Image (cartoon, rainbow, N blue to C red; front, side, top):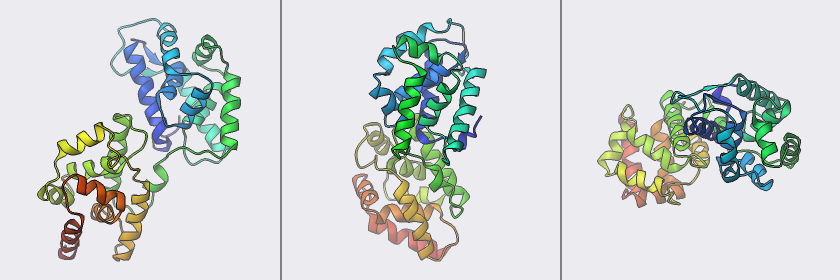
Length: 288
């Protein structure tokens, strides 16, 4: 099976949904049909769009999924079935064949339909579709050059400090847990606030950033909080270079938020003053 680190943000969401479906229906293992419906639930993903175009939607699929395996006293966290692991391995192979640096929901669909392992083929038949129909639609979408939101390319840049990597990873984990379509500035800011190993956490608290207000903005999908962090990460690397730093730390992440139009708008909405923050960060950096 592919390293979880190679999975796109949406692929991680689909796997999370698959596990939740297994628990809800009290099935003993997460199988390929659970993953198929998990992709149907991962709105914003390539896989979701492909399945939606074929009228393969969760509202239709879930009643059938519930009957595809007997109910058990399954543990809260069910294991993968061997057939699901086979499908995930095939998804990794499909990604490699296509020269992709990530495994996304589109590759999940290719893996599921490549040899029809597991019970996804049964579910597709119940939905008046077929593995081949799904596979052909995926191929056409990939040929059109569509790619999935994926944070790994930015996160794997060697210039991020270990603490910055932890912050970015925690932001993505938060976005997956909240089933948000992308990792956003709001997730990043909330993790920076919570990460007490970084002096940036104390700085944000001193300037009046309240966790409850930021959580509320994220839960309500406030537009200021839901802008993708990818562009900010790229700018942070440049920011660190301009300051003569050989690494990109959490201080550079916050400096970039202060300078970025969307980041500045979010900070102001949370009651902070970006310019005052910038001056404090620069003073703190000079004193270190």
